[in-house]
Image (tube, rainbow, N blue to C red):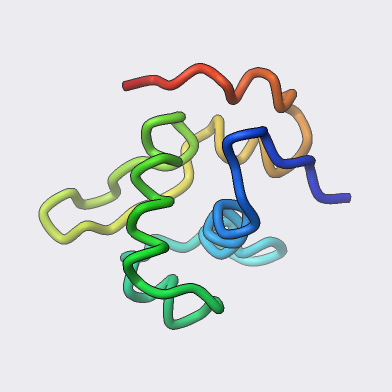
Length: 93
């Protein structure tokens, strides 16, 4: 079962997190452009949402110079239902 979205989240946020998670396979490290190519969202939309996801501690840079992102432990916990949605309200930055 998919976890509920936090009030600040949209379906785009979930799509980004799920693309990085790559459920059932190895997790991926991706750029916003690669995520956009593999979702129904524009690169600019993905980039904007990734900033917000990073501010909430759900993703982090894998390689900041190349703008490659990965899930954090908090991001994995959210996707697996181990983290309550109300715990996503606090921004880390």
